[in-house]
Image 1 (spheres, one colour):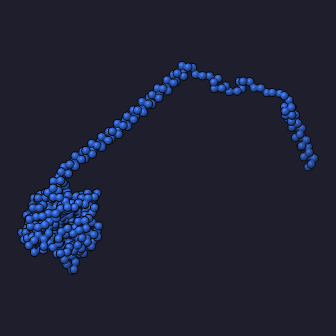
Image 2 (tube, helix red, strand yellow):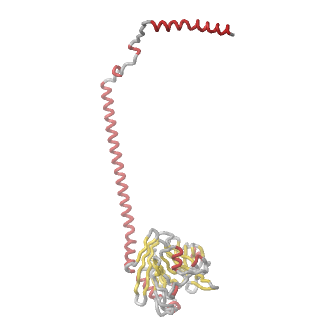
Image 3 (cartoon, one colour):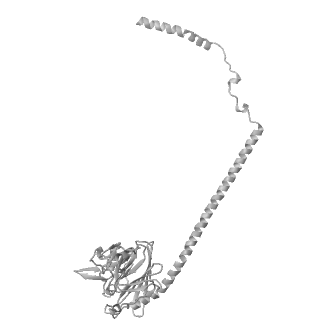
Length: 358
C-alpha cells in the first residue's frame, strides 16, 4: 500500500510542476499587463446624448403633463367642493321641508295645549312627552294628562300583580313597573275573594278573559299596534282583532265620537249623578288626553257629571272620548306622586292600569 501512495504522490507532483513554474516566473518577472481603453465602460459624459431638439420636445411634454395634471387636480377639487355644497344645500332643503311639514302639527299642538292652560309639570324623553295640567271647573277640581307617545313601548296596560284576579293600586303598579305615570283603566267585578277585570280585556296583545260581545252599554277601549286609540262596541272578536289591539279594557259609556258628544244612557246620568271620574280621549294627531275629576265620595253629591266631562272634552278639542272606571277607582300618578284626591281616602286596588314609560 505504501508503494501505491508514493507512486500517486510522484504523479501529482509531475502534473502540477508546469503550473508552479509559471506562477513563480510571474511573481519574479517585471511584466505589466495593460488593457485598452475600449475594455472600460465610458463615463456618462462620454455616452451618446439625445439631440437638443428631442430634449426640448421632451421637456415641453413634461411641462404640458404637469399643467394638465394641475388643471385636472383643480377641476377635481372644484367638483368635490360643488358636491359638498350640493349635499349641504340638499340637507338644508330637506331639513326645511321637514320643518315646514311639522309646522301644522306644531301649530295644532300649541292650540290644544293653550286650551288646557299652562302645564304644571312635563316629562319628555325619546319615548314620550307627558304634560300635567290642573283644571278648576265650576263644580269640581280636575286634572288633565296630555301624552304624546313617541315609541311603541311608551305605554302599556298591566294586570294587578301581573295575574288575573289580583289587584293593586295604580301607584303600586307604577312603582313595580318603573313607570313615570299611571291612570286607572277598566271596570271590575269581585268574586271568590278576587277582583277580575270587567268584560273584554287585552294585555300584551292577548285576551286576558276571552272576548265578550258588547252588552249593557259596555265598550272596549285601548291602543292598537300604531299607538292609536281604538274604542267602541265590537260585535265580534274578528271585528276587534281587525283593529290589531295591543291592550285595552272595558267600561261604560262612550262619551264622544268624531268630536261630537254621544247620548248618555239615562242610567249613567243618575247612578250616580256626580262622582269622581276618569276619562280617556284622543286628538287628531293621536295624542292622548286623560281627565281625572275629584269628588268626596260616590254618593252622587260631589264630583263631575258625565255631561260635564263631555263639555270638557269638547272644550279641549278631543275627538273620541270614553268613560273609564270612576268613583274610588279614579287614580292619577305622575312622577311618583298621587295627583288626585282619592275619594276612599286611599288609592283603591284595581285589576287594570294604564302605565307610561319615559
